[in-house]
Length: 71
Image 1 (cartoon, rainbow, N blue to C red):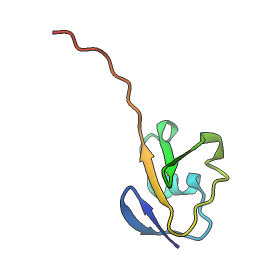
Image 2: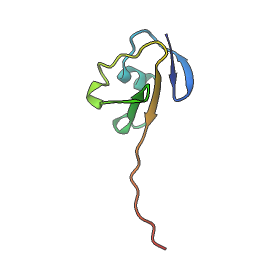
Image 3: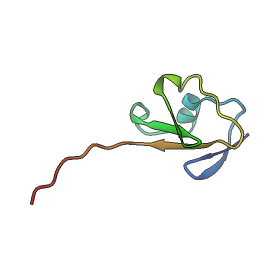
Image 4: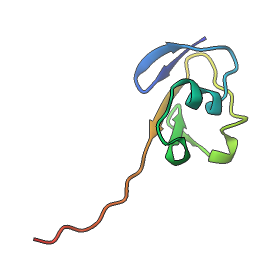
């Protein structure tokens, strides 16, 4: 089946889960990644069971903390 991952069209196996896609895509620091499917966030506890469907759009997001800059 075809999905879009981070703006790139990909062919993946039918019924792939978010967890499987994270492994297949070699996502760096998977413990810190946030995933959205069709612009909706997927809870980390659902990564193992959330199956992707034909045409889904998946984004891997990393939220970075920052500090204040004082000149």
